[in-house]
Length: 475
Ligand SMILES: Cc1cc2nc3c(=O)[nH]c(=O)nc-3n(C[C@H](O)[C@H](O)[C@H](O)COP(=O)(O)OP(=O)(O)OC[C@H]3O[C@@H](n4cnc5c(N)ncnc54)[C@H](O)[C@@H]3O)c2cc1C
Image (cartoon, rainbow, N blue to C red; front, side, top):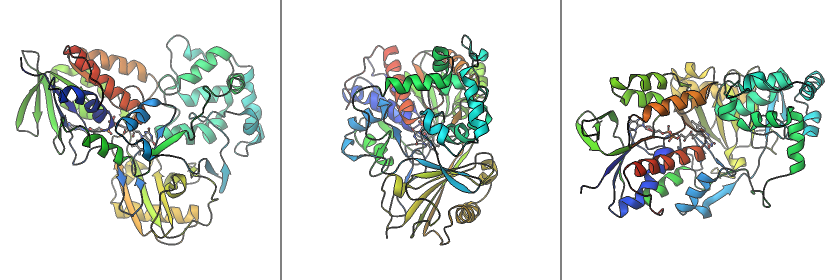
């Protein structure tokens, strides 16, 4: 009996997690696994830059402690001792020219404490008064049954527009790098829909949660975790431990089709034509749509309905500490009225304690989402010149950075727009036409690293199950 062959397409975190899950069977010779990655390096959106002599993440900089999948995999690859938490947390919001403290908020921007919300100078008294209408308003009609609504519209109706503009837009919009008026509540913050369903009012829901206290006896030391040597070390350690998986970087899969025997034919780099019995497809929607044959037109059309917007992150390292920024927080969120260039800034040297040679400051600047398509057409030098001017204006740093790097992500983050869950259900239904094929990655059940790792591992298990194999113990 020939050994079943499984292809993993895409070497981002989802593809690597799928390969990790398949590796024990490959080690036993029960399956043959090949991972294809189009670019020269593995990790996809994960890209750690060490060129400044310190660490600047060009993609994700952390994983959530409360979602177990990334932490579990970090432990499995043997990096538990390298985990670090946030050394300096919290953020400021730049509003009307002043750095104002962000009150305690959840990932949606919803305050987690009613008293600090009332004391916050981020909101006018009129806005605070308007928010109290939430106590009287009935449940959101659009959420009845399986209905969906945007996070922005949901919070605007319950708590007023200022809460959306000054809290949800910078916080949730910053995490998902999208417009909160388009962001699906069901797909991204189902807990808020549940809170409204249970308590009718969000204020009453927040109070009830505060009374219940944190779940579990030992809260994590830090809600965000990362690795001392950067997240690329996660990728490096993982790949090193799965030599039985054939990892082929700089190798683009150009097409996939099912032959008459039910095997999958991959066209690789325009020349090879390889057959596999199963595949985990871990690419973005446009990349996947371009691989599928024209006979899969419904699947391709549905993939075409997923929106992506480009992201640019700029890394800079300075010899000095910026004067104008208060030193007790990890970063600054910036409203669009304050800057058309920058949406947010974090200080890796403060947030994680990453050393900068000579003792200066490192900065990670996110460019404004709406202006990014324009910036994508400019050279790195032009982007850096404009970002440098803006950092000077906003933070008051006069000196020139001694190190700069521009990270461009054309399609790294899918936008979970209203109706996303329904769209994904239909995409997955089309994929069932191909037995032995699983879908994984940021597109499906969450954009965070833990979500992608879970989907990669689940995808690998599903492929194994359809081939009649049982997943083995991990490495
Ligand atoms: C700037 C930024 C900051 C983020 N911050 C955080 C954070 O702090 N915490 C967090 O949890 N998440 C964060 N995320 C989200 C998270 O990093 C991503 O959702 C996740 O890394 C995506 O993993 P993936 O494997 O699904 O896709 P990707 O990383 O996009 O990988 C897909 C891979 O497939 C390859 N590929 C595509 N087509 C082909 C083909 N035809 N043949 C072969 N290979 C192909 C691509 O080259 C790519 O390497 C951030 C994302 C970005 C962009």
